[in-house]
Image 1: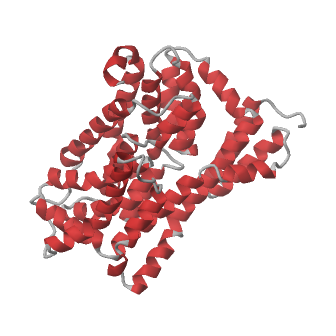
Image 2 (image 1 turned 60 degrees about the vertical axis):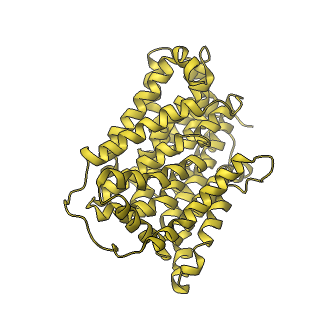
Image 3 (image 1 turned 120 degrees about the vertical axis):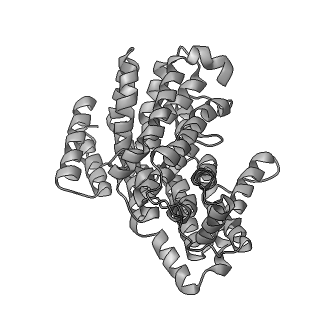
Length: 426
């Protein structure tokens, strides 16, 4: 290894180069990330480390597969008419009342988020059921996108999965157990706050309810929900009988659920669904995840990650809380919620080593999830706009911040009063 620059200087130069390339030169995120990673390796004294570039590219391959599987499931639900039929049934079952329709539309998004542990996958796979239902009530596209993103993010925080929490727990060598109460305490209140907010504070802009699709039969509506019921049933079964059934992993479960709708999909629409799965926004975000893995690998190689760990652990109150609520979402906006949980969540969890680590991990995963709404990645917000076919990240953020503020407040309170809450939530 040749002599390189100090990790702090490498980080500063990398951030400067990234903002120059992405913000000023308008380079796509994947290309900007890859260029920054190579530049950081060069100034860090490692030349162009091809092995590390390749290894880093496979760092989030499981999330990439889940992303494509979720997109395939969502497009198959649209192509088969399942999403429209289920939406019509939901509106009829709820009597076209706003709060019941929202609650029924939120359930599949929240459930998929729970079992996959990634908000983006929940948006792609289950968000398609909420779009036609909420449009019937007169919601704007940006509001629908915000609702989907909020429910997917709160579902991601809920047990039994929560990928950001798993990454932090793995980093601090903590067994994945006894987190259910703390994760439910962080996920359910913001989800309920979201239902209240989108019902009364940010409700539909049209008083009348569209009758489009109201002639859909109950049988067709239930048939539309069948693929969703199948994937949830598989997830429940493998957790109810872990010693008997083999967990096929979320990507395969989503693909199997999508294939159940195959008889209802016209051949021409099937080709369009497959093409849409591997092009456009899903392909772009897959490239983002691959290059983020490269960036994290180079951060580790050059010592930037270790430098962040040491300096984060050295922060005392109240700066540790400031760094959390400001620094974590901002860094996560660049690196995604999963990455910031791994890079920053682990050292911050160690900085609170004097209190219950279970509550540390749960609270930090919730703070990391705020990154789902922060540019430039803003994965949940971007994918929600993609599923809806309208809205922008800025519009989504302006409509989603109240329930996310509830989430941030709960997470900070859990950290601040971890000693008092340890006997209740663990």
